[in-house]
Amino acid sequence: MSNEEKPEITDSEWEVMRVVWTLKEVTSKEISKVLEDKKEWKPATTKTFIGRLVKKGMLHTEKTGNRFIYTAAVNEEESLKTLKSGLFTHICSRAVGKTIADLIAEATLSHDDIALLGEALQKKKKDAVEEIACNCVPGQCNCKKDHGMDCRH
Image 1 (cartoon, rainbow, N blue to C red):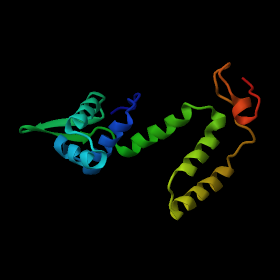
Image 2 (cartoon, rainbow, N blue to C red):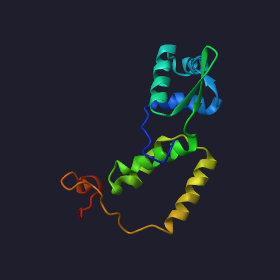
Image 3 (spheres, one colour):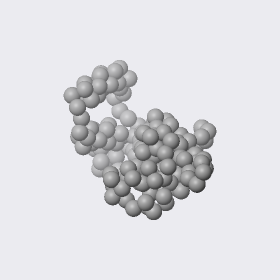
């Protein structure tokens, strides 16, 4: 897939992609088996999501005999990077820190994960600024209510 705007995929489509990324080359029957065990999905449900992903250009399909083999058209790392960068474009720039803190509070983390986060924060301190500028649409801002700060649009 090129660098053009990548289509958004649903949480359920992510489940299908995770199976394909793991197994590399896979039939719909194999995907269905994994997701039936993990999510209790019926094969028809899985096939619907596979079809959507093919239409979105996220999966390649190749006919081999009387079955189709699916492979990922996008790599997992690039997809995760797109997902992560998109998260912060949808919220007030002043809410990013709180959002990250909330994500950390909700996640199950290992001691190694926590050490990694500590290192990332230490590095980030070098680039820290005193105040984050609000990027909300004028009239839609809740900075005073949400962050106790006045906006400067």
